[in-house]
Image (tube, rainbow, N blue to C red):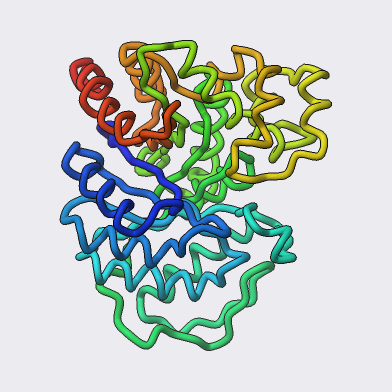
Length: 344
């Protein structure tokens, strides 16, 4: 499976700005445009619709929505509508969710089961079936869609950094997404756990799209690019406290001074609360979960991911001056030609 490229954005921009970026991404050759369903940004499906109306080829969908803040039946309605509007270009990314859960009073019960049950319900609804299900986390009583979806086979992805989620992706999804799986240990964990889930369900692991969701900065100043990544790493560490699963799998140990700084930090996309702790992030943490620096260094990292089974690189662009357009363009014009030249 040839390496495809996806672009992940927050709906933190106006609809006009998002659609302009979507057009640029399509023109540059990106295969996917993913928008995060994060509380409390602009509404993801409205934003995706605007992007769909301004593009012709690129596939687009949420990455990720979740089965807790939005019932999977409502997600089925939304993704089927987006697929109709976009001319069958919709894709669906599901995850366990975290943003806004504290504010909304939502708890994440059995995330692996919830994602699997959500995919199963959505698939049945997209076929036009009247569905009753009494799952462990997802319940639906005798409902059906009041319109015929243009496709019953909208591709569905499960995003997770945990074994239960990766296995669920292997069991029921068309693709699996893992954030920050750059280190060898993380790559192996992701690939092998998804494959194990697929084999449990008697599926061929090779048909599952393996997506590496990576924070990327293409910049000639290597030090500047790497330092830009450190607040995002603090965010990930704060979200994973106290077990730091991703970093432990990468063979890393959180230094005591950094662990102390993480106390009291809450999940947020605002980088400001994480900047002070960023000074204590070791360099090997940057190497383990991000791709940053000059184009040739980023290209080397992308090629290694592809050679180890990754079939889609989903980049979340970061720029020191906030001008992500430059990163989006440099990745396709300066990084991907090197990757393609290698035969990947």
